[in-house]
Structure formats: C-alpha cells, structure tokens
Length: 397
Ligand SMILES: Cc1ncc(COP(=O)(O)O)c(C=O)c1O
Image 1 (cartoon, rainbow, N blue to C red):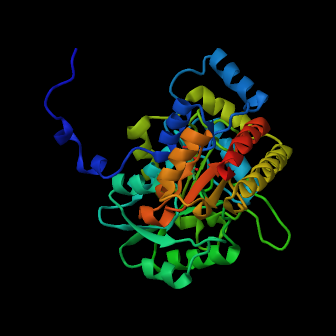
Image 2: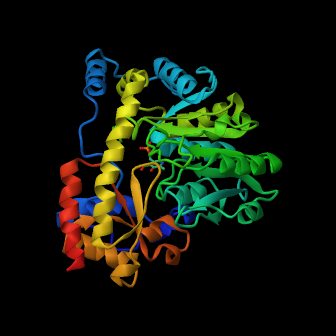
C-alpha cells in the first residue's frame, strides 16, 4: 500500500505539535547508526542483578501473567513502604498512598494530570530532565523556568521566589539532579519547602537517583526527600522507579508516593492511561525492594568508580567538567572546542569521533542557554567508558 498523497499534518493536535521527540532517545538511535560508543541515554550496558532477573523469570513461570491490581501489586507496595521506612524514615500506607506506574515517566505525568488545572503554573528548575516540558504541555500546565547556575548549579532565592504566585500549582524538583549531578542542600530544600507552603503549592519530586550519591569531604551530600521536610509530606508527590536503582530501565516499573486524596486522583489517571505496570516485573520488584542495605552501598561504590574513570578522561580530552555529586551524568562545557553550538559539536562527536552524548540545549527552554554544553552518562562498563575515552582524545588532534 502506498502512503496517502495529501498531507495529514492537520490531524496533529496543538499539544502534540508543541514538542519534539526526545533528543536523548534520538541520540541513542544516532549512536547505533554511526557505531558510536553511546554515552547519551542513561541506561546501563552491564547486567542487572542476577537475583532480580531470576525473580522475574520465576514469576512468569508461576503464571503471574495477568493484570496486577491497577494501582500496584500489594507485595510491591508493601516493599515500597518497607524501604521508604528504613531509607527515608517515613511511614507510608501501602493501601492509600502508593501507586505503581509504568516507570517514573508515567508517575510524573499521571501526578501532573491528576492535580494541575489548565492555566496553572508549574515551576521547573533548568537545565531540566527533558520530559518535564512535554509533561507540562500534556497536563495543561504553564511552565515557569528558574535557572540553576554552574558551576555548583545553585539557584538565586529571589529569582525562585519571583516565579511563585497565586497561579502556582507545583514545583518539579529532580534530586539528585539530571542533568547537572547537583544534590540539593538542606538549606535549599527548606527554602523551596517554605515557598511551597506560603503559596500552597505541591512539590513533584523525582528521586529516581536517590541511591546514587558521591559523598565528599567538606560538602553535605546526602539524599533528602522533600517529603521528609516539616509541612511537606501532605503536599509532596515522590516519583520513583526501579529503573536506575536496580539497573532495569527496560522493565518500566515505577511508583508515586502521595497523600491519600492525591493518590486517589493519580490512581484514576493511571488506570485509564495504562491500567498497570507489568505484573511479573512487579513481583520481581517486590523482591528487589527488600535487598539488603549492602546492595545500595555497592551500587554507590560502583558508580563512584565509574564517575572517577570518566571525569578525568573528559578533562584530559579538553572538556570543562562540572563534577557531579549525584546521579550518573556529567555536564560539561565545550567552549574550548570552538564549535558554533552543541548540536554541531554532538554531530561531530558521533560521526567523526565515535562517541554519543546529549546536546545541552535539550535541557533548556531556550536552546541558546545550553549551546556550549553537552551531557555524558557513565552508567556503563569500564571497557565501554575506556573505549569512549580513547576516542575522545582524538578531539585534541
Ligand atoms: C530524572 C529522570 N526521571 C525519570 C527518568 C525516567 O525514568 P523511568 O525509567 O522510571 O521512567 C529518567 C531517565 O533517565 C530520569 O533521568
């Protein structure tokens, strides 16, 4: 059959025309096309933990193959509540305060659709994880961007305050932060929390890198959840996922923690968006959530090693590196290379050097702001990182 001859673009909705496909995911396709080492999209190229994989296979074998309860298998929700108790010190009711979603991606959009009305504003720090802008469009929220500034990616308190007003419904916080690697300090979190309370706003907090931290002397690098702060539990939606903590980004199992009335709304949206996350993978997730605490210590040690492998190599290759305190990305400044912008540089890097990264502009509302930045991920095997490093040194030539 041939393609229809007339243009069908008129059928595309106003909402869908307002954003492009994900640049991050496009870079993965470009990397495959040109045989580049892929340090763009944040997914591990090493094996997921054997015991988690075994639990998934056993669940399928035991015929856990039909719909789970729409807001999540009970055992998974119990696992989330247990882990949240020991890691964050919070008591969460698995019956009324947890919704299991298809990744944190669905968790964030479901939370926004469940709470934001057309015309209400959502404050977003930029650079931001690229999903948040389309999330705002799809949920009819108006984004208000507030800059995080290098090198420490701190924000100006007056600028943040000026972004809040009577139309503000929520702020999106990503902590530890993608793409910057920033870990918000307690003082910063308290400032944000005070504004949320003053303006009666919610906080959607994306905490999927909660276990990937790089403590260092003289700095306060610890995971603080917005839900732990006084007065915030009742106005916070914690968005989280198995993807990064258990190295299973393809499983698509995430969750939202929120007070009962908000959870009730999220569950309704989630039910009609996706019905539910994969049942056997929730069964395996319930096992993963109960792994001993040493698992998380090892995860952190492994990522510290990977970060310390890539960062000096990037510096040697000529990048100005903003050393991350958390998550598994490194933002860099590319001014030294003399390219017109991040897109031209990324194209050169993929096609001529053989390494894929993400252009910085994809993390900003105004592309100019990221025109001399690119992001690398280091959730890769040592040999992958070293192969990328060897190629990157060609940049100097
Ligand atoms: C900050 C952030 N949130 C959400 C996601 C998507 O996570 P999930 O696989 O749980 O949908 C990513 C993936 O890179 C991310 O970096």
